[in-house]
Image (tube, rainbow, N blue to C red; front, side, top):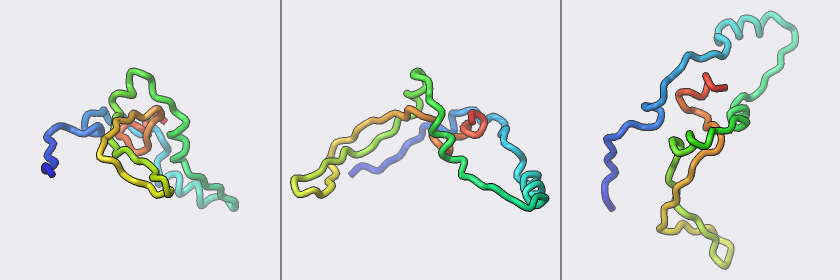
Length: 100
């Protein structure tokens, strides 16, 4: 097996990190403590609601091993590598908070 050495920048290195437009966490905690009732939620599913434009999907390609099921129902990893592209905004990109 060949060693994996890549000198190219990652996707997050190439993206422009814009200012985070979400509320300041400290101010949010202070407001949270002022009320008697609190409501919380998980914001990560919101990223899956944002579609990427067709011309931007090539920038979010990733490689994955092709998986197949055998006749007895077991999952088997094939030797073939498949290229996928995100259709929705991935959580964790440098620009994701700004785009949300």
